[in-house]
Length: 254
Image (cartoon, rainbow, N blue to C red; front, side, top):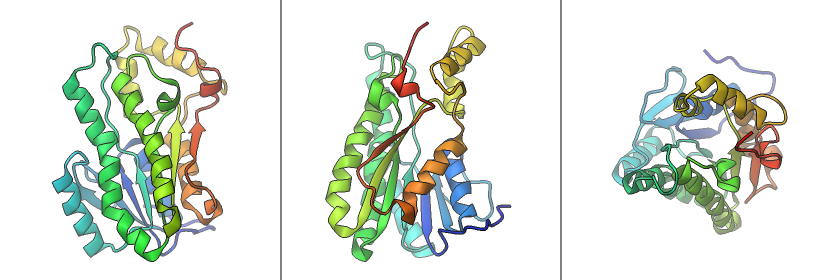
């Protein structure tokens, strides 16, 4: 059960989070609920919090997304805030990446962003307000050996953010991007488990972050909330790093 806070700043607003059932997406869902928003979790998995409108959909499928958009419009109403957090990856170098994996990663990470925008931007434009926050990664800025397709997709999302911000600005709709470093999520833990020594892989990853720890989903949700709030009303087209300093002191090896 999510309880209210002294500052309920998203009352009467509808926030949708793709990938809302776990990781960063789930943290965003919880933060938006605490701020009084009506929240929709768009995921292939059902959300466990009763207050959340859980809508199951496949971001890689246009048909599935159109059906989800219609259902949300009819049952919840116009969406004010959209967070695209859902993502998939493959652990492989550029040369070793299978084309089928590349295509699927782009269909979900980038194609999913396109499909979400197509579903929810028209209503925002009509009412001349709304905001999109797209989750990229510092891998989209600095690259990531062994995560080639994922890094490429996250770089594409940064460019999409800037393009979309220009396209929607005249209609009062803001678009921003968040680029996290290593965050304690199932996706990150899976990458550690691929290493010969998972515990050492974790320790070395922490050392890449000058602040000396991995990030939490809540760290990212705090920034996402700010960008969704009225306090950020003059911010659009930006790509914010939230990485404990990793992008200014990036080291992939000892």
